[in-house]
Image 1 (cartoon, one colour):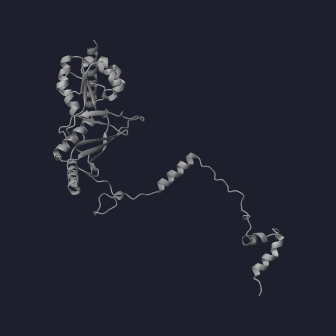
Image 2 (cartoon, rainbow, N blue to C red):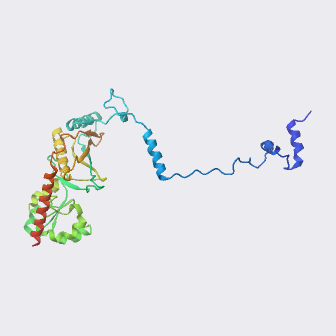
Length: 331
């Protein structure tokens, strides 16, 4: 019986022990189980030239310019649609509040959940400057919670101290409280003071910062009961993330009129921080409940039509009043 051709070839080449005719090793390498890898066509790949940052930015801008997006449509024609193809709908405030109440009924969620708003502000000024972040307290026309804020009253008059205690002050005292506040032994929501003690409270200016008593914030004066009511029942809010205000304004079980009144009161207070000769301060306003989606509100009719010059005169008058009260207390 004749042996296979492959077997005869192997026996013929076996005594050579690695020495094969030129060119034959490459053709028979895989069949012979050679451990040497095939020769590479090139010793090394050519390095790609580095691009300058300027050229890279130009190429990126060209790519972005080449991408064309479809224009947004104004209103869908049916109930099922891609939201990114259409402009976000905006609603009148009364319509939006009614929708939130309808969502709660359809979802069977808690009827006394809170109503929140997100206010986006235009904080940019000329020459790359920005409006400083601010915080404030506003007394809403309709209370929506039984929680009371803790207020500290600075006074050294025993009669004024007794009035403060009777009207719900959490802490009452004079300069002896400075040490405890600096060491964080006393922590309250707000601080109010009478003008006579203001020169002695200067060590607390850096510690309290925006909560330092002043006439601008209605936290310095002689009417202690009025100040206590304002800060115990008032809603405190502040600018977050450079230009965003997030806060609650009502409960969903309140009437539409009450929720709208609280919203307008808060927006008017926010607009008092608008710089003089400034355009529209509030850019976007979204309202939602604890369990619903956010609804974009139309700003027409919500923003106060107040002249920038009038607001500037008001702020200047308050500054002058505060300065005079501090000078009279020092003398």
